[in-house]
View 1 (cartoon, rainbow, N blue to C red):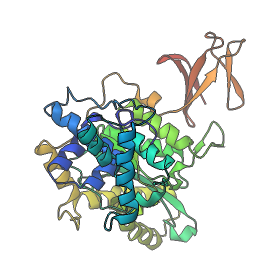
View 2: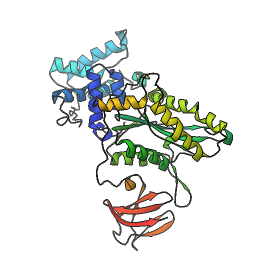
View 3: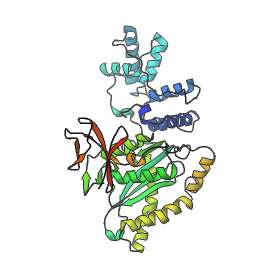
Length: 404
């Protein structure tokens, strides 16, 4: 997963998952996927949560790993040989199913010394009992229902022939609240870009506030970054949009989660929503002979999304999305937070690029020189608002602003 859990997810989101897991509303497998951790870490976090009396102010997510000894005592090695031989050769239901945390606990019970599960796992690897293959790969799971509005937003893009008369594919970028199924943001564009994704996020944040977590797909075209630049379209590394998207969310204190690779069912709710609009928008565009993306977007945002949010009874919840959203807020289930006062949203929602100030007091950006005047040899940040302006900042202070 990369980053430790306290760097990936807001504490409140982790607490909500733990509470649902403790109360039996979420399976162990679902909790593992939601938190992006392994079995051992899940139970370690849960123990920490219970130990602090479920007080979020005392709850810490730092992973304190016990240091391992380099060599195991002979009596423990003899015990592990016996146990692993049974798992490999004799067990029936659990043959070749290794639970190294359980073995670690058994060693502690018998010999009074706690070893980390990875110590025993490495020992089993070195002795040839365990191959490290993907036999224990998790299966596709059923997604858990979030506990309230704003706990998790699903965000994705759908490439489709939205305007049949054009005979071309366009992209619908959309964000949906997982709990209520309310569509909190949507935009039909000729081609998705990092900037257009950020505009959808900005619209939803302005209208509803800050959610806890955004949930996106590893493999969608969402990961490719093209954006309207100063005078043309720039192409960047395919992970650039995730970098810009992740930077914006991080600046706002919003977590970012990725759907498990190869598990399309994990994002079933927003995929169903795309299907809902695919059955409506193309028909209306063809019927009214719409060939402009701008006109189609008006149909989407002035007609179809409002009707879905305010009139459509959802098949699973049997509720209208906006009513479920409002009821969740009234019942105190909302995880939405207000935008902090004084925050410069225009800068946060720009496309940001670091540059080093040259000896003549300028930087180069988009094949042009731009005056900075100081901080020679130091990094500054170029905030690009496509087709409008660039702002050069350092330490969150504006140095220069240029209209483009």
